[in-house]
Image 1: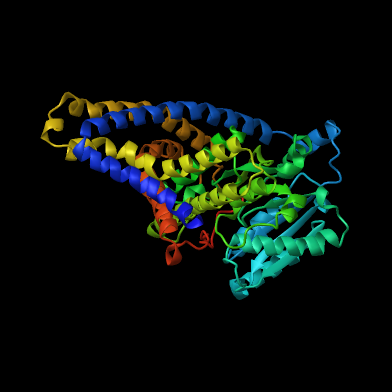
Image 2 (image 1 turned 120 degrees about the vertical axis):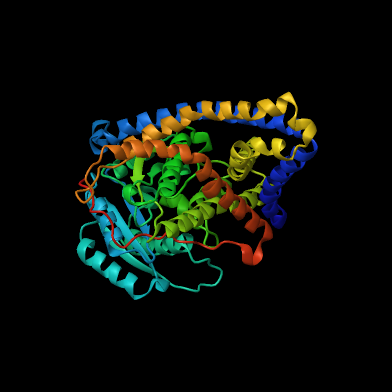
Length: 500
């Protein structure tokens, strides 16, 4: 049964594309009508999502300007007992990258004695990782309430090397060494998992504490900030910038729709349920989203993600050359699209689990299938298939009025969607962090960052749809074609850190 569910996403996506190609040849008029309606649907959806994007962005601006520790005190919330366990998995990271993350944690507007930080290294990371961890421990080991360096053993049977297995090992060690040894109640601990290049920001832990204490179901919720891939955004090639901003904007829109929100990348949750479900899955790649579904299924549908309208900043994908960056960008998108492996897990679990409401099962199955199917097919249909009936539809169709008007209709709808492109461009300019002293401000750069959004058709086809389709195909084929964890490379030399 699981094997069949693994094949469904690729069968659906490839089937859609092949059927459209076939009928563009055999029934071009029907395909032309379908494509016009499909483009209209996406134009209306773009307008619909624009309001979510605008709402989230405005809310984020308000929340980033707040003093959340003062708000906790002012509203007399009982927050002093809360502890934060922060896990930072590290593998082949430059010392400068990790040090900037710890500098950011040290500047937080939250009592540092309530923060317990784990630098989770890998045995397979070698001597350089050990030296990095030793330097970090020497510089920051006495700053927080608790500090621990863990070394995840390699070649553990049944484990897939990657973040999930490392995080699980680190969390278990942290519970034993930092939590149990200090007699801290599990109900009083919030666990945050960040990549080692993540800058959580001065107010993050105050924001998290506030939302935990005011949430309707605090112990049955994950807490999701807005990931912004804007660190060093000046230094990466154009396509990497577009994908980085697009990923951030999609999360903006998801924040405003909490009923659809799933944990992604950096996230937080209470320690007690994390222990009860057995921590992160150690045999798969997409541990960040899987943890949400693990909780959802374990607690029979009584789990949700609470949006935190607060940013955490991370590095965009990079490389030593422009070509290497493009290759890394493709691999990163393929890894993100490998989240499709959640579909067979969720479907198999839903079949077995009778305690989850049928309507909830239908809702999440539809969301997962629609999301991954659109990811792999929509860019092809919108940007490429609009001309297909005119190319292979035959003389009868190509001499018709519909054939003449098809490119005009689809072109008009795509051009009308420019409102989404312009909005994204303006927001991307606002989100761009200040230049460093090494790279002085140039006014024309903002015009360039705005105009680059008109390359979205190429970007979405090459670095979104194709890697998504490959991931689904690999899942369908199984065996040696399955993806393992791929770590996003970081440059050794980075920009000077910004002031807090």
